[in-house]
Amino acid sequence: MAALKEKSAVLAQFGKDQRVLVCSGGRYESQANAQIRESIMDGWAECFGEENVTAVHISGAAASVARLKPTIVFAIGSYLPESTYFGEVCREAKKIGASTVFWATEDPYEQDANYRISDDFDIVFSCDRWGHNFYLRDKVFHLPLAVSRKLHYAPLTGEADRTIDVLFCGVAFTSRKDIVRTLMPSLRKLNVRIIGPGWGEFGIGFSDARIEKHQLVELYQRSKMVLNLGRSLHFENKRFMISPSTPGPRTFEAAAAGAFQVFHEDTYELRRYFNADEIPTFSNKRDFDKLVEEYLPNPEKRAEATRRAQERTLAEHTYGNRIQDVVRVLHEQGFMA
Image (tube, rainbow, N blue to C red):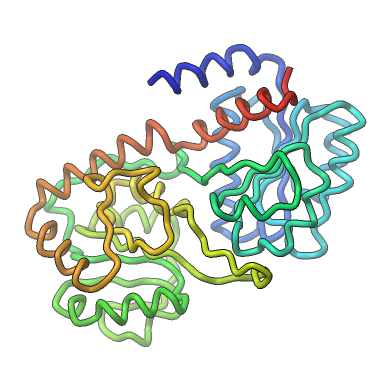
């Protein structure tokens, strides 16, 4: 509570007369990244008001800086492909005295290419705690992804609606397939829905379908247990082969939507964000079987964990919370008077 009051005080003091230009490029046309952009916009608007926040594509950002004269230029997303160039927009921002910030939302999967933005921005935020140590510059901070109240929150549902025993939605990356193969003797005994490109070959209960965000929320609310499996797909991460450490946005989104999650714990730092009575973890089939035995027959225990995780998410892990952290760092580093 004290931390929230401190953040509110920072915004009250430094949020006046701020104009924010949010720009993006790279792989931003994908549905998932477009939703992250919209969510981040909600966070800025929550802090400074919609009238003070404008979003543009990186291709038109330099001209927009000259025309709109923002006080903060906030670039987000990916620094790939090679055609994405942020130098021009940063130079225009310097001309008008605007602070420049980049939030790398694809770390650590593109880590080798971070040299492309490291010299341009005043402040860099990385969505991965371990990956943020591998920028060859100062003023790099960790800022995890989060959740949008408008896009991801859904009221909790009762047990009668939860007819799916175990759900997972996501691309069948090799690391995820390995985990699921290990759990197959247990999953075959349950009513499972495993959905996403690459899963169809696994048989009954598995599908290659792609689903929309509203469909995913509906599936969360129909499921008793949601698997949370990380990914290991490295686009430009060969130099140090950095393993992801911070939970991805799906963890926060599922919690806000009322899902009871069981988290596959590898290198992930889940306990910085959620307690064991909010999101339990497993690392092997024996642990998973114990969670199934403990939670599937016990709807009250699942409901309590789900409620706790949702409440913590809405209190601590919204994009409004993250933007408050951005404002605090900008002030502490001397980029917001």
